[in-house]
Image 1 (tube, rainbow, N blue to C red):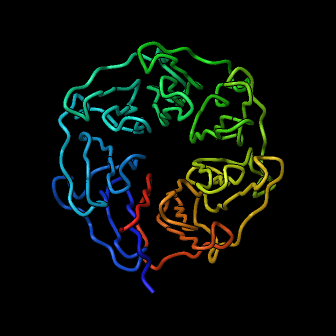
Image 2 (spheres, rainbow, N blue to C red):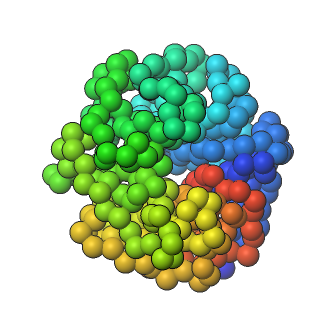
Length: 328
């Protein structure tokens, strides 16, 4: 039975593909996004469950109908790599876009844009840093978090006007190689970051960090590489982390915690990933459904809240981003 939800898959070199029936059939978007473009960022507006932003190497695009049709959003980012998009959960007109390096902000729904200088240090060990994650804090939307590949975590307390680099996540520069980020609200609030070393947790608003390393896949591996992560919409203590032997790697898995990082297990995957599990998608409007993807084209869907993950038949090239939206 087809799922009553839409999955969007952004790739490097293969553009954007959208499935309106939970992964059974697929539509490759051909206009206005080029069919062979790079889509490294997909983000769903938290105030509009059918609106998706897609960040490419050729600018920003927006869909208001679950990815069926798209419009180009005029911006200064046409010649930059877009790595992340964050939408204010209290005001959809406020949109942040992370680029290579730094970021941009719109306060009028994308009509005009301001360049933001986060103070990112250059060069970094990979050359020009990338703003891989932007989170507008739902507890206080004047607080905005940014994860940098490779320069650690930055925070703004005034809606993005000014930024501060937070303390290092560890002694190695690549402890600051931020891949995924998530914010757990509530009385035991925490900020989580994934890096090549594992997942780091801060319970004091980023002033200090505690690292958890996952088991290595092979005896000769240097570390257990981590990429994207997602917090389960219906249970903030349950989180999933994409893991693998390296990047892109030859194998991977999904790590899960159901007690906010106190302990970890591996939910059942129908087929072993062919590379690191790179990214996730979830939606508070699609009960018990979650999506994950390996960097080399496998897409997994869980319909039981993340206990079991089935690989869909369709395979892609190099996947970099995912989105999940309800059809109704």
